Amino acid sequence: MKPVQDIFPFLNQPKRVVITTHQKPDADAMGSSLALGHFLRQFGHTVSIISPTNWAGWVNWMPGAKDVLDYEKDKQKADGLLNEAEWLFCLDFNIFHRTKTMTEKLKEITCTKILIDHHQEPDVESFTYGTSDTSKSSTCEMVYDFIVDSGHSDKINEEIGECIYAGVVGDTGSFRFSSAHAGVHSLVADLKSRGLDHGKIHEGLFDNFLENRLRFVGHILLHRMEIFYEYNTALIAIPKSDLLKYHIKTGDTEGLVNFPQTIQGIKLVALVIDRDEERKWSFRSKGAFDCNTFARKYFEGGGHYNAAGGRSNDTLEQTVEKFKQAMKENESLLQ
Ligand code: 5GP
Ligand code: MN
Image (cartoon, rainbow, N blue to C red):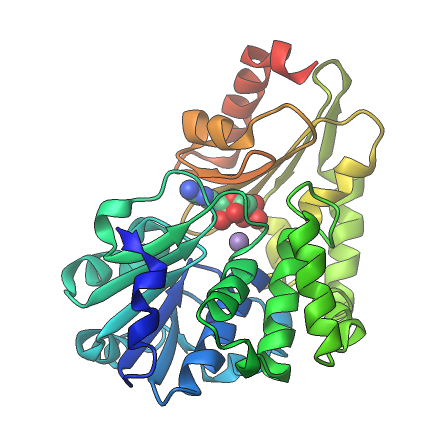
């Protein structure tokens, strides 16, 4: 994988570009894809953004989100665009299988593939150019760096600023994680000096749910959360019946994993949701507990040190049992 800076000389040669990101894109995945799209279009590139799956309704306020293609819904059109693409940007993921049903297509096409990502263990062999940096708060920060390093910061307009800020807020837990280093605050200062209305973005991200979602949160915290004080661990297991009862849609469960972290002393939070196709895990830790290693070892997953995810084909009951076993095996790391 050659350095991403090597493509800067070609930025002003218009191309057919596809930008894609991980399944169920969150604020960082969607924000970075849209921001890069808004940037590249200013050079005359023809840019399409393809999400492997649908996304949360509260992402739709982002400028340009309505034009994003959902691969599962629009496969034929998306395959056509991928076949024709000269540049493929892969943002906020670093291994093709995180795009689920798009995986084979991404492997098959032979265009120039460019990675911009901040997760661990990138599949560098699969990319022509790229940047992979786990010290970055978010892929949005990396897209901002890409724009500034290319010498085109004058192209940072209102749309780009809003998308980048949303992803940075999302991935830094509103600037509380250690990943919110000084450079992140400088980035925000720069966006503010360019006229960013940050309050609007916080409303878009956090005050944009329906009543059923808040009642669902109440139900989950009351009935589905277990605390294991001897392991400083909290577990939330959500059965499918709860999702149906409260009409839960993609994105409604975002942020749930953070609630148990408000309890004094909790070091690890695990959340599992009984989705149609698999049991999906989220892990969050405080301090010295490596969620990435844990998710890789027990739940075919990965991510970052303090935030990772995983999956399982077991039933909800089986995978919860496996988690409890894993928690016991890791007792010394959880003290
Ligand atoms: P979340 O719990 O918010 O879904 O994910 C937390 C972090 O772990 C994110 O950075 C996400 O990209 C990553 N992640 C989530 N699920 C998986 C997975 O199944 N595999 C890998 N490698 N990373 C994941
Ligand atoms: Mn990210």
